[in-house]
Image (cartoon, rainbow, N blue to C red):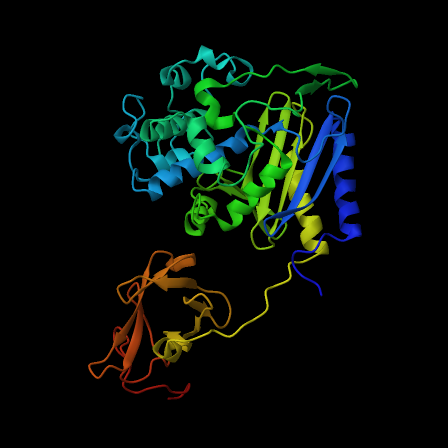
Length: 460
């Protein structure tokens, strides 16, 4: 019997290997490792090239650069969930004395704080972190280049500040908090701040000749939360599963969904993507992908997950440039999802049902627009237009008899059932919009009333 957890078909596996082989040959990189996960489990890995004379595998470490930022974001969300910080808190509340303390935690997470993209010279990725011993050295004399909250402007110093925030609130170094709170609970034993063999060395490939130059590996110091980590394809497949489903040992599914939610518009001309809270978002064909890309001298990395398809892909390489790791990872997802579409779980009837909720389901009308109210399997409600486009959302109980919108136009808005004095349902109130059982029926609670002459024809 076919199940969603079966191994990939031989044709799919060959297509994946072919894509990786073409990427390694055309990009001229010393080695590439790639892996695909389905429903949270690694189902394929492949490699081309060599590391220290041997073909690497899914357990070989590579530097992952800015994928580190997503791990830092997870630590920050954990602080929020514990009530230790708020996303709308100014940085100054928890990390005083930076000089940019008016920016909020959320603005740092989604790169809308207006901070500079890089630290002052010398180039931080190619120089020892000891050259920037304090936050003032990371921020420089002109740390703010845009008004806070107005636009997305990617900032490595911003995530340095978030790492320092974690240290200030937790009272332990960023790397220790990460190991204890994220890496160990997710069994990511091969993800570390420093390389642990087997690990690939970083290389620069000459643009006009097939020769290479070794790249120095520098420890980033205070800027480690922006790009320090080393990891493997196998570990990152586990992390991709976490980004799709959450894990109560680390972050709930609801909090992980916040990480994946677009926060600010992307830079002008980049409307095929966006940014959440420490995560990049990208449209690839008709799919929405979440994850992050990364690079440091000698290395490029890409991690994407398609939550709807239950498929994730990781691509790691040890060259400074040449390989579009994020694009290749997105293509690997497409190969699997198109060749072997996700098999849905079997439909099952609800074990029990609230009869009052059941009575609310069916068609309602906002003015003359017909919408359908559906009771979902998880005990929520879903309101969607029955014809054409329009506004719709899913709702969960709010605890006070109302329902809170989760997505779409009504995200955060409250849906309430309004009853008549005799207890019968009069209408639904959704952010002041009235939904009635009929379109402008006499006696309905329609704001402004209903014409007493009723419905009529052209000559009426």
